[in-house]
Length: 173
Image (tube, rainbow, N blue to C red):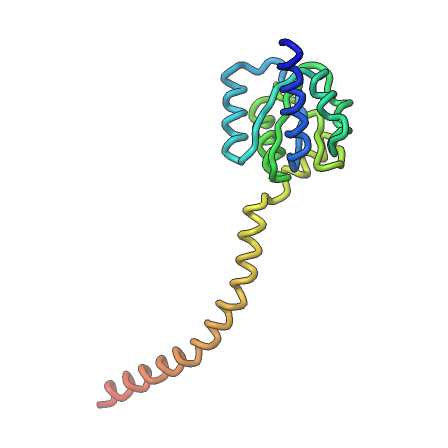
């Protein structure tokens, strides 16, 4: 890799570290190509990405970024999982690590906060952005449906009473 290529990689990594909501660092020793492709596919499904880079270049790219604290985690064969959504990369990494014990989560960064492996697991347990939006929409819509049900209830009660009276008159006749 010549100097220009290294500079391009450093720029790309720097942009990733600046724009990502979460970055998860893991060791991937022993993963096969098929395993890595599966990991990348799972990450893509949740809106994240996976990147392997030389630790030295990654440390250079980390300088001046909010997640610069993860530089200490960069030893050995490391892989970065990242996403704009602060939860997606952690969820996909934890799910993959449960199925494949060769991926070892070292930690990560959520903005300027350094995460240890337990912190990554805690972030993975949080609801995603889409789940939170759905929950909020459900909370907003619930009072309206309750009001509509309360308004419609007296009319249905009256209709039920009238049909019962009609049935009673029909039986009496």
